[in-house]
Image 1: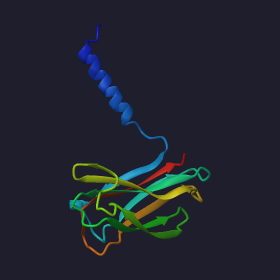
Image 2: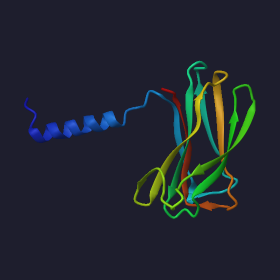
Image 3: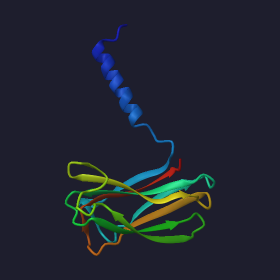
Image 4: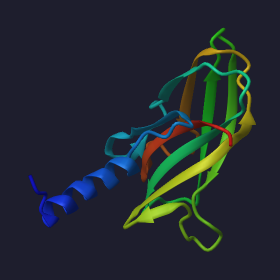
Length: 159
């Protein structure tokens, strides 16, 4: 059975596509939540969980933000609540810079949508193994906050 040139190209295309979308082995958590109507209400707390097994290898923790080009601010203030497996709680206030001083959007953009991955903690060693819960809350003075489309967290093993 011979494979024709066009069939070979289609097969090659799908193999390349599959390799590009393969799972990232360094990622422990990489999850984003779509916000309804591209608005982040004060009472819309984004909750994510991660099972952390390794308490020796350092991890990098990122905040992911997708904003529309019509977002009215150059930054975003948010609260990050972290609950450890033994029930301890920590709250951080984070300022995410989305545009530079000239008003140019930062991050990766396509059309009117901009994706940012902001380093929150570098080389962080989790103190215990188990299920961690993370909560993201917007801390701006606008409710609901228009122009924020998705938010999330990425935790990866540090290289």
